[in-house]
Image (cartoon, rainbow, N blue to C red; front, top):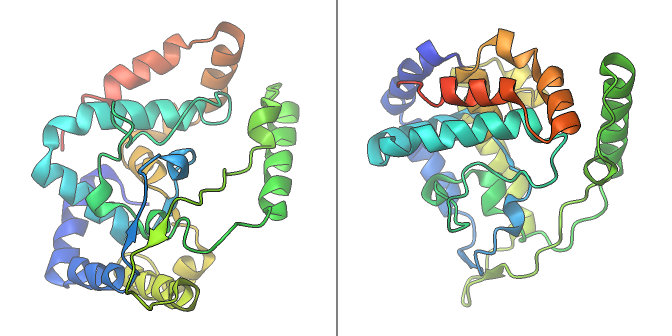
Length: 246
């Protein structure tokens, strides 16, 4: 993950090496789609590569820096409450329920709905149940069952525009690997292949901005929220990190 002090340097390195242009070329190979923009795919933020995170960071800095306080506040809130509040959604959704960074949304957002009806992810469910057990035994926190058992809703509103012959299933694996190759400027290939850095924009952003000392208090914030429906500690973090200057 990239600390705050290295973000601008990383963006400059990516620009100098033409990585953003290469990323755009990967995106251009995906079939052009149309949908109702219902935000079904925004219920849970999708994972992104480091180069995609830098692309988003650069886009916001250049085109809408005034949005950073709202984005940061939403990111901090989501990070601390995603496991205890079913109403949390991707912090890049704006007040109109539209993606505020749609032009630079990550690969996983772009392919959502293109692969047909998703199968039940048994491994993800087992991982969530194990996580819930860890919170129960280590922190005395009972994660809400609707979160532990959650499955991403199916969306059948994404359509490939007529006249296009590209078959998504044949492309997606190869294109994902192409983006992974762009990561090697920042992390070793074995880290890329482990998908350790393949996390949602919100996680990238929080890990860049929020101190480790604040992050380790996540269980305390979660417990306060479950007991009181709010957390004064979280509110302090939101106010502090929303003022982050880039």
